[in-house]
Amino acid sequence: MSIDDFKPRFTRTEIWKGWQRTPPKPERQIPYDLQLITLRLADSLPASAMLSLQQEVRAQPPQERVLYRRKRLDHYLQQGHGCCLLKHPKMAAELADALESQNRKRYKLIAWCIMPNHAQILLEPTYATPRIIQGWKTATTHWMQSNKEALALETPGRLLWMRDYWDRYIKDEQDLHQSIQELHGTPVSAGLCEQPQQWRWSSAYESG
Image (cartoon, rainbow, N blue to C red):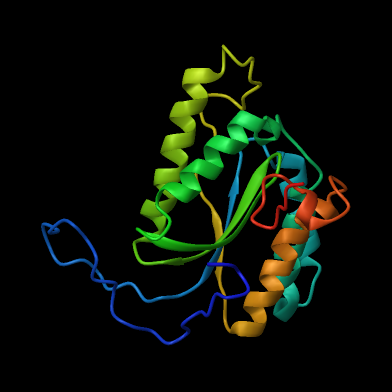
């Protein structure tokens, strides 16, 4: 299904009944909410940048701080701090494979973009989001540890990812289309390409 054909359901429903296992105890029902998730490599934001950001946020009017913080965090990430391990094609491919491996099983993958030091994923979960994200992190960390010497990967240390992640819910269809446009435009904003379709590690990529 193409992104243009995707029709989100913004009404809450019961959890998707498609599991091949019987849970040991009843699980919390998960609504069909669309989420934009940002994963960061462990060294993607230096302490000096976080301190500067905190000072900037405090200087803003209270009602504007949440949006301002999100935009400034995106800006800091686009500066390319840290080892930028995801710029290695094989590391980026491993993350892309991890995203696709559970597509239409634990979530519906709508749009994604892998940058040198972070990744943005827009999805519709049908499973607990923290467990989805932990699956991505576990798979890619194991791959990194197994291949870092052979590929001479410059790694951020024992931990590949920051322990936390950022997420926000998509409130309506207008927000959805704007979020997809901004997500696909991230490598353009960072000066890595001229058009979203040129960025290899994105759902907007067009070969040829």
